[in-house]
Image (tube, rainbow over all chains, first blue to last red; front, side):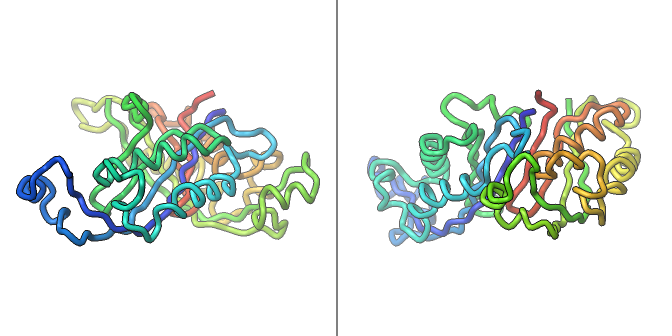
Length: 144
Length: 136
């Protein structure tokens, strides 16, 4: 039987929303206080959902320790207590939480092999969150 | 179609152990969850049903009845119990969060009048939960 397992992690990072393609005025108009020159930070909550058949012996979709270590190695060690604007991923991309969500999804899709990656959700504040299920998979969220 | 979710809580103990694995494999795989003296959690259960809104009552399902079913079928059976030792479906199935979601689905699937079960979500802790949609 197919079930889904979700786990939440926290990273703290800073960012500045600023596009090199925009003028100073346009950046200010589009991003508001998020484009203040010295940046600002968040405690991001990352919710990772994986799916798969429940193993009849272990009763698990995957071993949580494998998920924890993969997220730790590929996501937390890379982004926690960093300035996202300086990460190579964001050299040419604005580190909005949409883009961070996609970046985290793509890293886990590449490195996590023990179950199917279903969705990554990133909460920037308790009122803002973003979800990504993979390229072209907007339908996959489908009431889930 | 509209979705409606009702929450419930219960507190239970359990341990993770498979007789099909050696003691060493159990410890390696399940870590501290394999402690045979067990440990416990405050579980939060979310039961989501789907259906059409009744034009007269404005309900998808009578919430009071849904609450009663959840309590009768799940909370009264699981709450303040040792899942491995006192709940029949876990006699030979490890009460992982995944298996709890599946077991609760089976308990509720045919018990809700007027609506279809959509999802069982069970939180073992605020940062860990499992979802089951009745998929094979």
